[in-house]
Image (cartoon, rainbow, N blue to C red):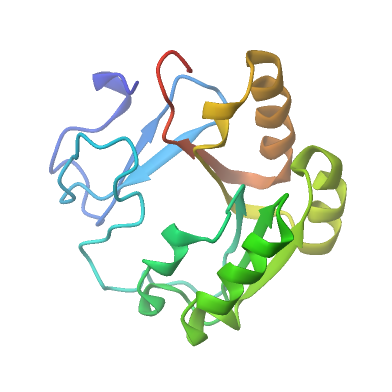
Length: 177
């Protein structure tokens, strides 16, 4: 859970996003302050209210762990991606990755690579071939893991981030952290 002191007060920033620090020292969350909160545990991490592309000179490297068919990524408006952004989908199921690549919008597909395999076994290859990453996303993965495995994966994924990068996990079921 986010603590009130971890997030700036509404209107305290001039950007379109608000950064909030999660209790884990390796995790942060960025969310749009105008996005309505939903009671559904699987709702709208990719729902956006702004179509403005943030100004930047270079692309971002984004890794989606346990991406499956990348349903969340398919909901992202391709206009939100910088032409130099690079996305990497990771999942243990190569058929799910193929499904994802087949169903992504063409503009997103050309920026996306698939990296099949167990993230703990392939972390070194992910780092060498595609990293370091500006953003590592793990949506729902922790719901299926024991505490020890969550700790191992959190450490491994944090190491895949560039200095100052973000590791974000979501859809955490009770009683997971």
